[in-house]
Length: 171
Figure 1 (cartoon, rainbow, N blue to C red):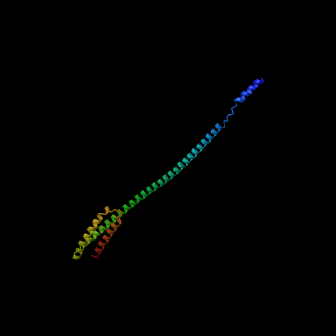
Figure 2 (cartoon, one colour):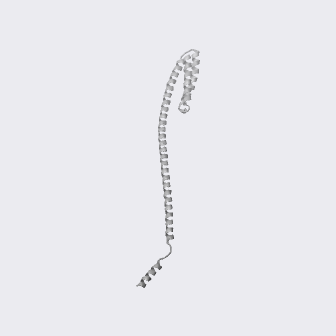
Figure 3 (cartoon, helix red, strand yellow):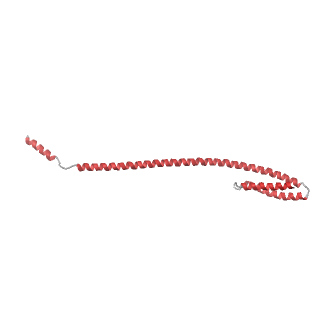
């Protein structure tokens, strides 16, 4: 039995390998460290991308809000423009009515002057009628006058009326 026991011990001692297996575990540890480092890099990259995406979303929302604000302002400006155009059209119509009334009074005054029999009145009536015709031509052009030229046009018409009416009162 001793011999068997010695043989077993001898076989056991022989079967124990004296080779160091630490290189295998060291390589596994290096691989694990490398994988952890790569994972950490990927996580940082994903976090950076997520932050970039969120920042861009905020920028887009801000740009969309700015655009919506501009569209609202544009709509308000269009409404204001529409109101202003309506007011302008009403003012032009009122001016045209006032000019027509003033023109009718001018015609009545010229007709009264034409009834006078003296030569000075007849000559004055002829000159004033010619100026009246020039004024009638200006008034006929009223619908074609642009908004930019309106102030000068209306001033010219008013001054012409004033001059003719002043000369009518002289006679």
